[in-house]
Structure formats: structure tokens, C-alpha cells
Length: 527
Figure 1 (cartoon, rainbow, N blue to C red):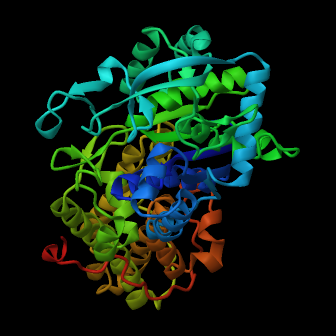
Figure 2 (cartoon, rainbow, N blue to C red):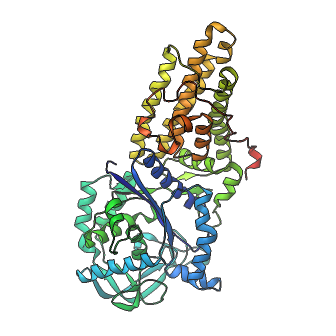
Figure 3 (tube, helix red, strand yellow):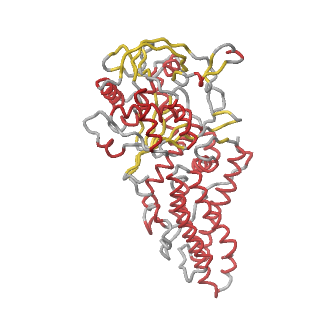
């Protein structure tokens, strides 16, 4: 990622139900990537939002005896916007597909494709999943069982598919098959991880069909600009949010020029929309395709994908109320290899919370600052002649920064965090070996005591910056207690690439008592 700006997007989520931790997982991962790039000093923008059109929303609203706009407004206000605060998302914008700016941008995009000959009228019939808002191919269909025996069902939702027969408008997606395959070949990192890329390439090689992009059987959607009897297919509408949020189709497209193209972080179940349909749409409009499309894995509970419909959904606040927001963010970024499926369990998060956050990092920070208070009157000690053990800590920090940076550029958030945690483990081992409490008993070892605690405190300074994108609340508390805010500036302004420059905290910097970063949580308190 070497461009002067970075634009990260989450999918926009359907408002047909309340969010679960699978949604929060995507939000947090994208937020960590954006925060990390901001910490680098990169001009960075983070977009999230909600998808509010389509048949599923219309039916859900009707089931709740309300109209779709009122239903969407209620869920955005009561569920989706609060989710962002619940897991501490630093989004720069929140787009809704019912926003006027979005609807105007969609219509401008449609009109351009129509004028340029990429849209035509035709008839279509196919098996449609309302849950996915998608027509299904043979490989996406399964034979129903139980109550749905003898019916064809969606492999994802396990619910019967509907046969739709309509006169629609079509996007000439088939015309872009060769260009898409060339894109995947020339830019092998366009779709990540490799397993996702292979899936996309295999799908496109099977021959792309043209895409039905309008509906006449319901009216909850954006009208087709040249034919108001049709509304825009929800996915064609939704994908455009990434550019309508940058004022595409308006007189001032400076945001589009500044931030496009984007890095899209999506769940693997919506990979094809983002890696096939979306770049074809952009090609047709003469716009750049995204920088990257990263399809992450699913969160599994009891071996199944997180799902409200299957009653395996867990609300984020069920976790944050016990462990806190920082722990939620840390756990899902550390415990799951980003890009692969991962299983959630209460036992695992409780164990990691105690071992890695409370005992590992939190106890390290409190011990070092407590010894600085006891032996150096709550000030940064002065470092004297360094020994090999001290230099090893400084060298490790510099090495970790380089490895973590490289991991983030590969979207390997879990690898970056594991590398940073090497500093936590090394500092705990360093303190155990150097025994500053023993050095403090010998006046002749005063200089050595100062060097050891100065080294450990510098390590904490580095950790505060490196962990700020992941656990920003704890990192800020530590930064303030270190006196770093007054001595060297705000935490968010510390260049991540300069973390390894040793000796940034001036000797004598006044420190304050550290709040407990990760209070003890009994395992039986967890659900």
C-alpha cells in the first residue's frame, strides 16, 4: 500500500435484523487497518453504513407492521449506529442507501451505463434467495430436508428458493469476462486471500452471464432513471455506496479523486459481488477498479456460521459488558487468522483475557510504572550504560515494527498483533531476569536500576503506539500515565514507522498512576 491515501470500507449491512459479533468482527478488522494507516501518517478514510433497499427489507418491515423507511430508521438508530460505539469504530462516514446523495449517485451511474450501451431490456427467470438477495446458480442450490424436503433451498440459508420471472434490465457483465480474468492475472493480490482469488477466477472462467439489475415485482428501491416502473436490483444499488459516499455523480468529486480506489473488507459469502460484479461495473463506467478485495472467513459458533436466523447470533454487548471493548477488539484480531474461518468460545476469550491482557500486558505496565513511582519518584529514569539485554529489547522493537508493518500490508492483522505481543513477552522476561527490586537494594546498582526501568518504560512507550490501532482505550491510558502526552505529543500523532527510534521519553518525564487496564474477570462471569 504505497499510495498517498488509503480508503477502507466495510460492507454495508442489511438492516433487516440487529447486528451480531460477525458484523462487529468485520467492522473491527477494517477499523484496525484504518487506524494503523492513520498512525503511519497516511491520509486515510474509513466508510461503513447500511443497506436498506430490497425485498428482504420490505418483507421484514411488513412483518413488523411498518413501512420499510421507518423500519430502517429504527434499526439504524437503535442497533447499527450504537454498534459502532460498542466496538469503538473510528469511521469517517456512515452511508445509508436511502440517503439522497446515494440515490442521486446510483441514478447517475445507471444513466451513464445505459447511455454507453451497457444496459438493455430483456426477460429473465431464475431461482432467487431473498435472504441473499441473489439469483442462484446450480452450485449454490441444495435439496431441502425436513420441512423443506423435495424443495430446492439456498446452501447458505437452508430456505426454499423462489422462482422469479420478470421483464428486467440487464447489465452486459459478460462483456467483461476477459478483462476480469486479465485483472486477476496481472494483479494477483487484487483478491485476497489466495483461496478467495482461486474461487473467483474459477467462477469467472465458467462464463459470465449478464446481470439482471432491475425489479418490477416490488417498489422498495431506487427507480431506474429512464423507466420508473423498475427499481434497481439491491446489490447493484448497494455496491455503488463506495463511490456515492465520495460524492460520485455530483459537481464536486474531490473526495473521489482524493481517496478512490478503495480497499474492500468483506465476508467471503459476498466475495463474488465485490470481486466480479463490482469491478465489471466500474470498468463499464470508466472508473478504476478497487485496490484490493479481501474476503475474510466466518465466525463459527458450534461449527456453524454466525446467524440470527439459526439462533447462533451473539450480540457484541454480551461480550463487551463482561470483558470491555478493547478486549473484544484484541480477541477477534488475535485469536483468528484473518482470512480464515474461526471459532468463538467463551472459554477461549476468558483465557486469553486473563493470560494475555490482564496478566501479560496490563500487569507489565502497572509493575513498571509502580517501580518508577517507588524508586524514581514517578519520573522516567535516566538510562546509563546499556548492556546486551537492554539493547536486545531495542532491537526487538525495531524488528517487530518492520514485521508488523509488512503483515498489515498483507492484511494479516493476526500476524501483526502476534509480532507486537513478542515485545510484551520479552519485557516480562527482561524484568524477571534483571530483577530491578533486587537492584534497588544496592546503592551501587542505582545506575543499572535506572537503565533497566528506562528500557522497560521505553518498551511501554513503543507498545502504546503499536497497540493504539487495536486497543485504543488502554493504549491512551498508558500513554497518559507515562507522561508521554506532555513530553512528546498526542498518541494518535506518533508516527508508527518511528516507534523503533529508541530513547524518545526524556529522562525526568513525570508519570502518573496507571488505571487498571484490564480488571480481573472471573471465568464463571463469562456466559
